[in-house]
Length: 93
Image (tube, rainbow, N blue to C red; front, top):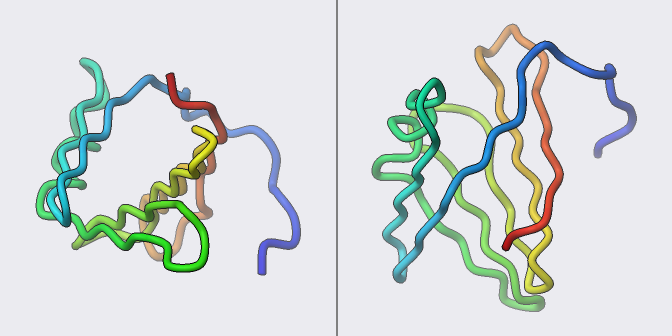
């Protein structure tokens, strides 16, 4: 359960592209954020059953990208098991 947020972080948001085909995922982030491209190589996709959404989960890292039918998304990233999570909310174009 998400109860509260710690506030703003010093991690900037960035534009990214996610392409899915079945269970295959490709994430493209701009220069300076290439670490996310690597995090999402061989990632998993779970498609919603009761609602239309997709959850993309990196294999060796904690976090996810959840994309809703209306184009909204939630991007969660946990830099390490000891670190607080970083969250970005947005709208797909």
